Amino acid sequence: MKKERIKPIPEKIYDKIIQCAMNREKNVLTKAGILIQSLTGLKTRDFLALQEGCVKKAEEKDSFGFSHYLEVRIDNEKKGTPGVHRIYVSKFLKNVIDELSEYTAELRKESGLKKLFLVRRGKEVKVLSYTYWGCIMLPKFAKRHNIVDAEGKWFHIKSSGIRASFL
Image (cartoon, rainbow, N blue to C red; front, side, top):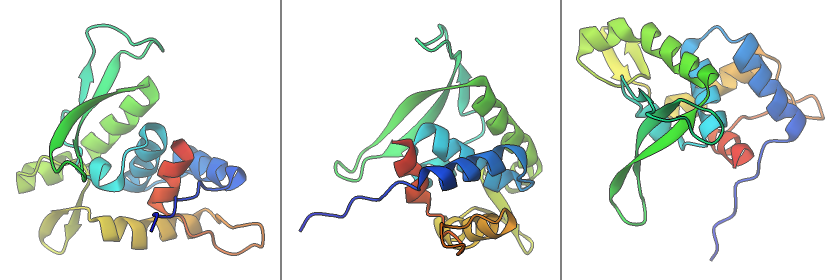
């Protein structure tokens, strides 16, 4: 049986999600997650695993003129082997990741963790979980910014839909 392909988010809704993330979202983790995924196409588990220092200066600009790249470790489900990939990023996305890094700097220092997507749960610092991202943060973002479908119902933003819209 063939796996059903994830459908992209409808264009008007996708545009509103991106505009809200860029210009109105106050939660740095939500803003960064949406923008990183929408501009790179990374899977949720891959962008949640980004580490401090993941943006590097390229020796040469790429064909689009980007002078920085994101170094990300991507697990290959089929082969079972991880690989390090370089994804060239715009200055805008570099700045988003820099903001995220600054935002979580104290949590990294306190916990000794190197990941960028960190949260405090009680007295403990943890890496943001896939489940919390998809089930709590994205729905809250949709409600905060009144992201609705054509019928006026809350649009259920799925991380896989953001990724499918990129691809």
